[in-house]
Image (cartoon, rainbow, N blue to C red):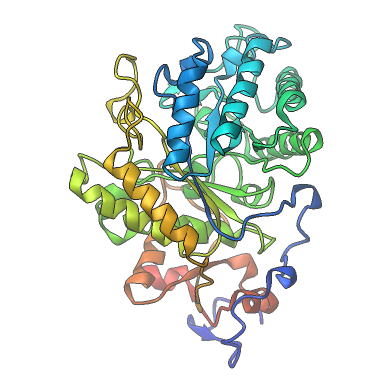
Length: 455
């Protein structure tokens, strides 16, 4: 089969192969190459559910004003809701106040948190290079002194400093039984839009180096690159091919507001409720290893209410958003943002940031907290589906965001147009549309080029 889109736009193939939708995991093809053995990890048979931990007392400033009993209470409350993991966020300048100076006090507090998580029965993903959190910049002062300027992705001084931090943390917590792995940093593409601009080649090189380093110091763990939505809606920073094939899992942050979904479709529109489904299918199209899982590392209701949805509509929004992502059958986990509301006494955040928690300031579950916990319990008990997606939307490998700086929905709109026609589409890259073995392994029997759906 040739990759020739001058042929009739709707092409059927593999007749009689309807029963061959997915190969067993051990036989699944690795189009484009074998999976990197350094980053192969065992994954659970069922989808995991957790939260991004936002300390209720002092936010992430709590690393400095440490109150271990409060942290222990928070983690017990998270576990009591039935969640199995947290994503913990360091504040980079607290942990590494100098380029060759890592705070022993902070590292010891991280170990205390892991011990508290162990007591509560929670696993912990540790997000390290956090120069951006909740709408505020937290780059250490030494990252960009007046002269010479240092880029955290390209400067040799920065690379050495970053590896020192990971090495120090790995020595202290790498063998802890509750340590899931390192997340390189929170939404690093945000920094790439301003003071830390890089080319895609430089960004990918940095990610490969840092993920490889994490694997050497803590082998077999879930080391990931916690990007936001930007690279999935624009050709920007880290390439989608790199994000889908380096590290242990492919990371997605699925927010209706920041992706523009709720503005385009409405909060209860098909494109908003199916956001996690679309992003998962799109990310999966770039993966070489078809056994590799996707982690929806951040998902929530930031900015959805009250502008786009009323409070009584949020449970339905949450239910459909989470359930449709889960139904792809491609997920490692779903991790909500966030665990707790921000203490209102702490000023300086955008108003939408304060009430995103599943628990309130007294560790009481909020209605959405009970809803997400109930949903997690249900889906854990339900076998992970392997849905039939015989129709594939064929999209260019690159070309998103060429004409505008914001999220480019040209692929997503076509995806949801097909969904509106009663199809449950998958996504195939143009570079793979002629690979019959790959198409067979994914169960596709109909290819529809993007231009035909748009036309």
